[in-house]
Image 1 (cartoon, rainbow over the protein chains, first blue to last red):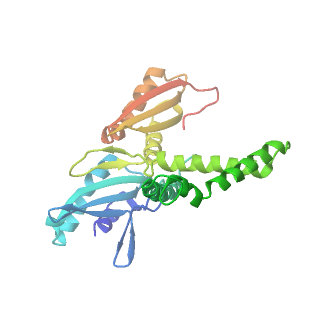
Image 2 (cartoon, rainbow over the protein chains, first blue to last red; image 1 turned 30 degrees about the vertical axis):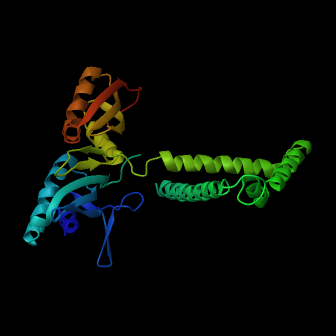
Image 3 (cartoon, rainbow over the protein chains, first blue to last red; image 1 turned 135 degrees about the horizontal axis):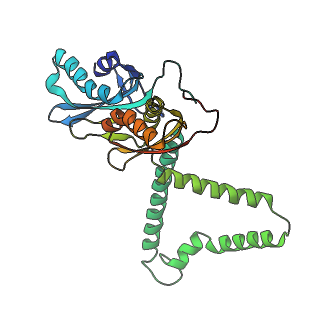
Length: 100
Length: 198
């Protein structure tokens, strides 16, 4: 849900599993690349997002995403279970490809 | 990165096996210290049981053969080089971090972070928009705890002074460096003849 909300946000290209494929969560037999959820205590769960961004201001996008995820989780009625939300940008896509 | 993770697993496995061997050896030594003399649970009896005398003779003769052979023993050389390579690989597994250091800001409720490469790509894209700049090289170095440094080396045209180019680059980089706690260090130099603003 958190990953879906983040990837649906403007400026995010996709989830990113990391260089060694370490940032993944298996959920119901599906491999979700770019999200790691961990128990944080007192019934809350932290969400770490690892993303490939589009060519947009990363700071603004990074500040906007926790709210986007928070809204999606709250809409699903799980707002009280959400702990901290961290955002890491592992790559940026250039529409024309990066010059070498 | 996957190679380092594999090496770290190998280091852990070898470390565990060495500890088991050390524990068994220590236990055997302790048990064979119970009695004195040359028989029963004594140290000479343990040496006999392990055939240490034969082992010493065998190693001695092998080393003598190696010394006397005169010409280069390729097999021994390859084994030696292989062991050096294995030792270096195991040291890599111990000291090389498995996780790449990210440039990060914030803590507690949430963290914003990025790898060096996308930050450098973004910084380059921003710096190249600066007036009178013909080419840019960027290096991003994460700080120990938060933020980091972005080093910019830029070529500027003759019409644009070094100071103006530096200010322009710093201005363009400001949104990125402020968001990620990056300290910008800009060095400029006059571009070669024929260089053009991109």
